[in-house]
Length: 383
Image (cartoon, rainbow, N blue to C red; front, side, top):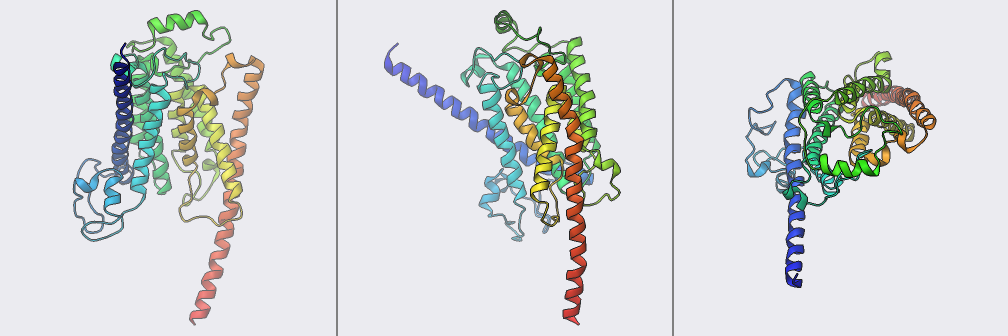
């Protein structure tokens, strides 16, 4: 082939890859903009589609050009165009988080050919060009499946940050979509419930997988997929209860670390990812939560403390992007060692969350003891 044709082809491929990456980020930020509406309106029982977005102070509808994700907030300098009331920086932050996650998910899942997925043999074809060739339909569907789980869990964490209850309809829609699509699309669950050393993919399985599986979607009911879903729900319920057990014993229901609905986020994680990965997510979330509270043990409690569900979001994002390096499967070690590691993770989860709750309660008590002192001093000076 002529060198100029090769150079032109490489340039076109580079343009395609850049366009695809930018498109993923833009679509993610647009969905993040809608997610802001869900986070604000759904807990209040408001309609998420009507009326259009408007300033909460002067109630002036936001113009289309001012409602662009991230860019609109920057152009307005964080203020309403009409009344100059400040617009929370949380709106562009949510849009940027979702946009960046969609972009990273594209590179980690679709562009790489599924090389970061646990257990699954990577696709032979990879890169943005393979989307046009139709070799990545399975990974695109899996990416949409994972992205939806992430935005629902992210919305739940932000709703908890606002000290509100996660709406039941948000959780139910996520459950129904995850179960109904997952039970008929086996490609959405690359890690089966029963993984043994004998079922570890071989070289022959890899060749057959290239011919029969990768790049395509197979619509149909399979009993093994249903078993995977049920095991994921079962372990998701166990991990969810062990992670949020302090919610059951605490008496006060305000300004708390664990809030209603935290366990549901892990149940959904088990449904979408399977029981092996939800154990990892629960353990790492509890570990990071305990470390965070330990580091802040000598500081006063914030007015809006970071809820425990925020750490689920962080670990879930890492699990979705780097699942191959965070998930331990039986084929990678001996059965005895595997059961020992998984058992220790499950046992340690309630210990870590209980430790985090204890540290948080101690910080909260110290803050309450300091507040009356400051009030008395202020009243004395006033008199």
